[in-house]
Length: 215
Image (cartoon, rainbow, N blue to C red; front, side, top):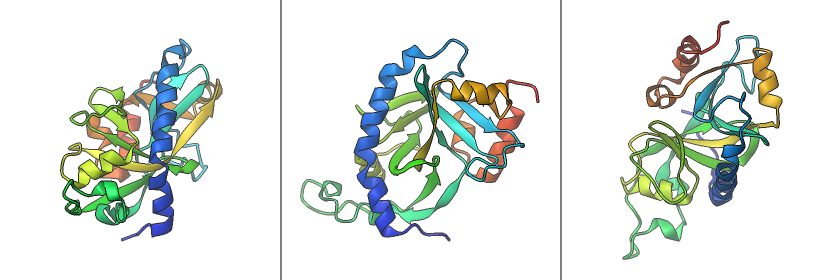
């Protein structure tokens, strides 16, 4: 089993609050999306012709798309596993009101959300969990980027389904539209059964079979 090093994980977790502020800005701009741009809450599926190892057979959940660009999280690139209790070790906020450490929450899979700013962490999750920092993405799918959701997962108060990813995939204004026009990416609806599929090896083929464009 592949394990992520403590120092790097601490940096990723330390940037969750910064990521939350970035998501808030993205949410404010979402209404400015170009009419012909792919809608937020869809999946971007890498064409078989993409050989870039960062995106080969990648499937990306498009969180926001507006006139300034696009932002998404890859959902099928697992990096390894890590005990949640280890991730929150030394975090005073991970303790209960009486000062006792919260109960261990088992292991958490860590995914590569994309090559951009891997110091940022994001939790994609089911909509049974919501906080002030939660961003709606699609029917049954949301995103939260704060330490609080990881603490809630430890205490068994978190979402029923979730993915913890570091880094994101981003495009400047008009860039994603051009790549879709070149058929570098296909688009499909994002559904919980696909986004949270435990078998990441089959996500690309399943998503490709649901694409809304012809090959």
